[in-house]
Every structure is written in C-alpha cells, then in structure tokens.
Length: 312
Image (tube, rainbow, N blue to C red; front, side, top):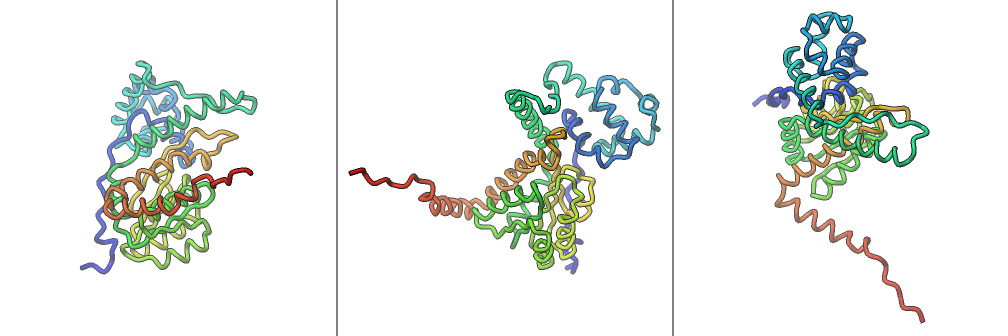
C-alpha cells in the first residue's frame, strides 16, 4: 500500500460544459482573474450571445481586437473545450432569450431606489444566483465531497468574513447529526488545527475569491498532511484550487457599490452547504436521524413561551 494518501486518491472525471444560461454569471465571477484581452472576449459573448454565435473564431477575434488564441483561451476558461462548444452554447442562450424563457437581468441597485424596487431586484438576483449555482454545480465533485464528509473522523472548516458565517452554518449542521466538525474563523487557530489533520479527515475552505490567504494557508497544511480537501469558491481556477482535491463552484449576483461579491456570494454558498448536509444525512441516515431528533428534543423547551402565572 502506498504511504502517500494522495497517490490513492482518484479525482472525478472532468465536468461537462456548463449550461448556456450560466454564461453571464460565470463571466461575472471569473472576470477579476482574466487578462484584459480574455475579459474583452468573455464580456462580448456575454453581452451579445446571438451576435457572437454567428461569428467564426477569426471574426470574433477581430470584433474584440484580440487573437484567435485568445478567443480559444476565453472559451476554455469559461468551461468549454474549445470555441466550437462555446459557439453552440451562445446559440442555445440566444434561442432561450428569444423565446422569453430567460428574464432580463435587473439593473444595479441605486442609492435612490425605492425600497420596493430594492426588494424586487434582490429577489430576482437571489433567485437567478441559486439557479446558476445549481445548474453549474459539478455533481461528481459534490458526491465525492459528501462521501468524504460522511466518513470523516474529523472535519475542519475555514473561512473569514462572510464566508466564516457560512462555515459556522455547515459546522452546526454536521454537529447536529453527530459528526465532529469545527469552523475556524481565526486564521491562527485554523492553521494550528490544520497541521493536526491526517488521512481520513476532511478540510473545507470557503472563499468566494479563491485567493484569501488566511483560508488557503490552513487548507494547504491539511492537504500536505493527507486530509481530503474541499474548496467552495466562486472562482474554480483561483489559487485555493491548487490545494483542493475537490472544487465546488458557486455563483454570485453582479457586484455593485452597495453589494460587493464578498457579501452577495453567501446565498450560493449556503445552497451548496445545504446540498452537502442533506447528502451526508442521507448517507448516514441510521445515525443521523436519531442524533437530529435528540438535538431537537434537547432544545425544544427553549423555544416554548414561558408559562405565565395567572394574575390575582
């Protein structure tokens, strides 16, 4: 048997091309990591899928002031094997828009927007974000992550800022079904715990940008010690993926002055957390169900209104 646990790990097969309707959200998520020329191609196809679908690779390169190689790189970065696959996705997206199946994307929230408009815009963006995340989620990677969590001796979860809140949510859910899970928002505690992990343990890093050093450092320590590592990120090609056995991609609404990605990404992260939890609960049902029932019973009295003595 190999001494290195990473040698026995077989990664899932590469994911299929993403659904056409997730193209805009992928461009928004990946744009900060793109070069200027690649971003020009990506933004062009996202803003005019019908027009770009009619263009050859040479014509699109001329249209965007780039090169054919840049167009191919943009297609691959967006998740398509080549420009031909991207072109087919653009045609499908254009047909979807013409049929009215996809609602128009709402404008950014303005400072002087009435509260009713804010509610409507946020509701639309949240619903679209959840749909994009669900459609783009790699089920093979998700299934592997569920299996790893279900059989883990110990689970460490790393996140800072808004992602730390998502990590706490995941840890609390797993604890309620009897698993040993801890969320670490303090980067020092995260690293000191990560170096104690070993094969059979799982480390989960949550970072929308995928480049948060305080999250990458403990994940790297866990990876080097043989733990199964999972990255939950909005940018699958970001540095955090270098130390992740499994990558779960999320979507996020468009950034705005009042709603940066670090805050708006929480909705899609919580969806993936719920998917992980339900999957683990299903795999461990015989022990999870009694543990969850016991936790409900233990807390039930705290959710009842205190008994009031009758007035005299």
